[in-house]
Length: 374
Image 1 (cartoon, one colour):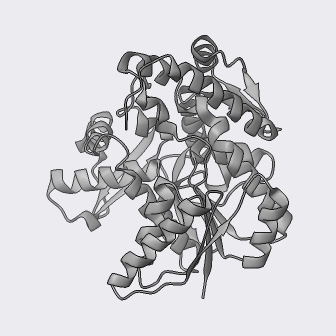
Image 2 (image 1 turned 60 degrees about the vertical axis):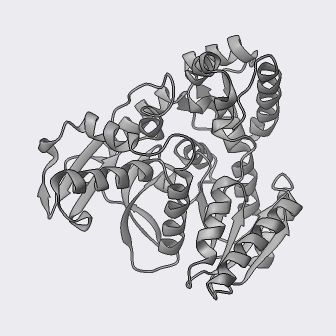
């Protein structure tokens, strides 16, 4: 039986766990989290739900501190998984939504890349442990993969693939086109090159529109010119509920990628950061990894440029060859002025210490404002 390690049992991790145990094809699953009591209860909850459906998958729990690279590497060696899924982060991206509206909008303008140390730190330590284990499992990183994976790629630690982001947009567009043209959804094929920035632009305060490429096919016929594509993307994305209900779609994206990485027959899909590239692309995904599946209208160089330009609007000006992350000027300015976080750049190995500083300064800042209960 195939085995999968799932690191992190928060919102997305819990959805993955609950969906998987209700699938008769569920692989052996080892859930790993530093919060043992919480993690064990979530495993128990999932198994109880599965048992109602007369499904009894093999699921276990292990307490793991990802900051302990040696111990994590031993867990990976002992379990020898085919796929590892990382859902562990130090602070969720939507924490700042609890601020009063005006304050939230000012801080939101720093873009999601502002919080990259919080998303990068645990993924970085996990990939160090994977390398130290000497094994070569496929790794799916769910933590802000458009930005995290390219940083890890610069230091030779790239996960196999990300999830969501472009694949939150693509199925929404597909369903929208199907409904608009009154054709079966299976006849619609989308080719989309887009960064996480386009996902948050219609949904979060003060985000900026970014470049993208899209081709819309219906029954092998190009119908892109039937749409105002800016409006198409906007309308399709806005059909999602506000808040974080979309994380069920993120979980489905993860599970689909997991099964694809355990199968020799490749599937056509969309995902962020194949081969550590920035942003999202159409790809073929199989147990060999991810291969790009760009249509003839766009070159790889053009696709990468689109996503690099978008990253600048998501708070990250560029990533140096040694993995140093350089914030966009506006992001650095907002973080400094509002939180007193005075770092224009950082290296991956500094991400944990900077994340602690950033979270501490945010906590101090939030304490001065009446926060909204989620």
